[in-house]
Length: 120
Length: 218
Image (tube, rainbow over all chains, first blue to last red; front, side, top):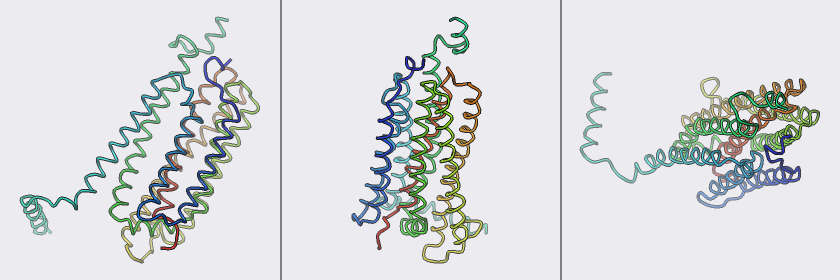
């Protein structure tokens, strides 16, 4: 009945993915107790999270076998937009200390602060 | 045959395949908006974590890795039972379908019980609930409060999605017991997509909230 519409995955595949996901959860927790230096703990934790999410999307959410290309387009669009949101927003805050504001802007912000001070 | 076909396929679709693909695509578009719904919070989290990393580490170390990790495992198990439920719906097996949906619902309740009954209660009693009971006066107190605000809002929004998911499970169990899914499995399939998505959000929340800066002695 449904077989000709949707691809029916084998049970063994689901169980394997489930075991791998549980192992990754144990791994990410275990790695947190090891000092990897500077920011490597965060990088490893995020890399494991991305792997886990990919497994869920590909196998549990059937993207591996989905017949429609449009679904993939929607997923890629969502991830791209999310990346733009985080990277562009973050690049502003991450570079504020590197580049000092031009003198004119500093003066202007001083005037604003002064003006607000008068109101209070 | 024609009557059977009409019962299975809604008027606006050519055939069952088109109906199936439309339902799946529609759910994925909804999930794309959900990614950006949570994405705003993740973007704000990234920026403030960068600016106040020491405070975020202190806040993170007040959370329970044991319960956070347990809840991660609970959600992964619920994703397996949900995937099995979808499989049963595809094959038209009514009894195992109801059983798997029921186990998924139990895992969902278990997650919420641990989240609210153990973790939130504990953090509230410890004086780490911003705006309600915040009594932490150690270093970086203001920004530890900011972290706890992120923690409560992000896990709260996630828990809200879990509550909605449990409601969907209850609805599916009722419909399945009335033989609604004998031929139509689309609803179970797209409910599964939603459930797995909520699992994925938690997969990112767990390391980002509970494991900041590692748990080794500094």
